[in-house]
Length: 214
Image (cartoon, rainbow, N blue to C red; front, side, top):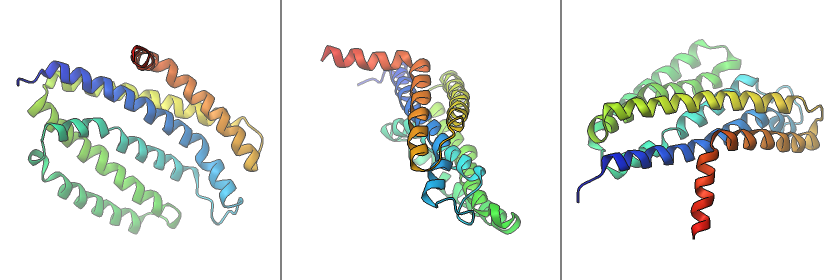
């Protein structure tokens, strides 16, 4: 059976759009609610509170890690395992090296941030470029690679905008404690869901129509 590469690429792009709509929504919610949740959890104890950079890095880590999931699924389905067999070793070595570097040289308050950031470096500059290079040289084409990276850049810009909007909206809520967290959660959900529906309306409608046909 001959593979239809164009059809497979269209499926890849569609599945990635659906996945990224969920990832962007979750990232916006996390950005808006991380600090309020931690504040309630530790009862505003300044010794247990982390600065905002930690929550931002956690959101970036989540986004970068999840942004590769669809491509990885297609890569596994195409049985492209041997082409990047050295990737885990290289990424692990870089991760370990940057971990040690950050832990040794960063101030005490930022050592955890350094560990998170070193993992982001491994994903963003080793794993994702390596995986996409294999996928778009062995299975798909370089032209399709450019389309893929353009869409990923667009999703990243949308994610930054939505995260900023959700964070700003929740910080307008003056309430604190559990009640404040609940209200901020509703506000963050309204802003994030509304924006995702606006940017990914075509994908959402296609799902609704496909369910309607059944």
